[in-house]
Image (cartoon, rainbow, N blue to C red; front, side, top):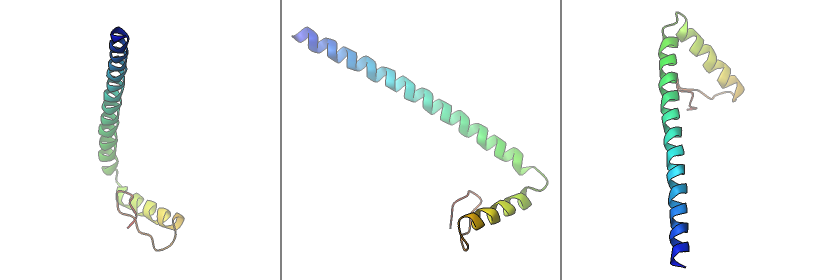
Length: 78
């Protein structure tokens, strides 16, 4: 009986270790994606008409989400 409990505990520990490994990989992927997005955002900011484009996007978003809604540059409604 004791051997079965230990075997079960060992199995659970292996499964938890595997899930931990998967979560760590997901976190690394998210961090890489975040870095790429910030890099692309900085490149976009260097475009000549960046400010005009942002204003047009804000107007379009306000029109789609109802009049009176205003958006910050991060896309959040205020």
